[in-house]
Image (tube, rainbow, N blue to C red):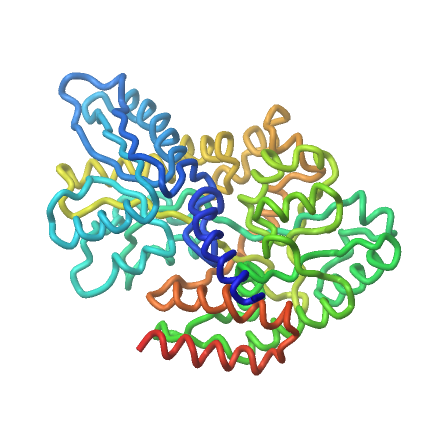
Length: 455
């Protein structure tokens, strides 16, 4: 029965992530998604300040707020480029419907939009074969190359060609409830390694009865960051699964040790980014969340009572000097081969995602860590006292982001990724953290099942 419940939860989670999680490692996701996976198609024309000779383009997305962001950027573009103005017809569709329709359209060369959003988990489907149906963006990326997080471009690339620009880095950070830690006599700033985290967690449990963190069963956020810290991945260089690697075993065995010492514990919903889990955080039952930067918006919107209690810091690592972050989740904006005016579409996409104006808007409106790091050092933007994210947290996110900006690793999204995520999040993690199955045994079974399903 427990396995059936876990499978049901995971299926539900995939729908939830299409609404709320920006690139979940366990299902389709984008952190700004506003439309339900069963919502009706929405259409709107943007570019009200465009002249009669403006070029009309079509944009497909599964996230309503992405269209709203492009609306603001389109207004600025048309002001700055009176001779290259654009009108944008935006269509918002349910997650699966949009990606399925888009894949057919670009493969057949019939009915594709000029510009589209493709969620990270779906992106490999569009890069298969020798004839990629998307336009390479290298030329419009060049002006921003030196200030852009490399890992967030590589995940939307094939060979030496860049095909998509993300809305955010999704750098994983540590969020600490300082109120709980102070009651336990713990200073979060002293937590540098997982040994430090364990020691602090034991003290927190002994003094307060609270858990330091979660043992996730329905998402691979934790596994991803622990693999990245070891410069490893769920797949090898050829995209083949390796979920029973020494690095994965080390990661899971460390988490089991933390669980046995009451440092971490399973949480309702299976991971922090669920409605049930946020309820537990609101009650003060967990003292930390190790999640991507976009999780800040969850605090703002769904955990309002915790304002002023949380500090942001780098992740603990196995040993000092290991990379302290990994970019998780994401959506790449692309230009299709059949776009009416390919060069104009490419220039606009670069402006809307990578320019200083765009990155400022991405932080101010969406609360994301922009891919172009130029704005990261502009304190007038990042430390604006009127910004709700600045007001909520005890520390500034960009102080930590700038500290770890050269350590942000990436986990590949490949053809095998959906199968890997499904098995880990519906069977393996539950077996390890709920049923107490031996880590090596559980991971060997997962490797065998994943390999069998991929045949």
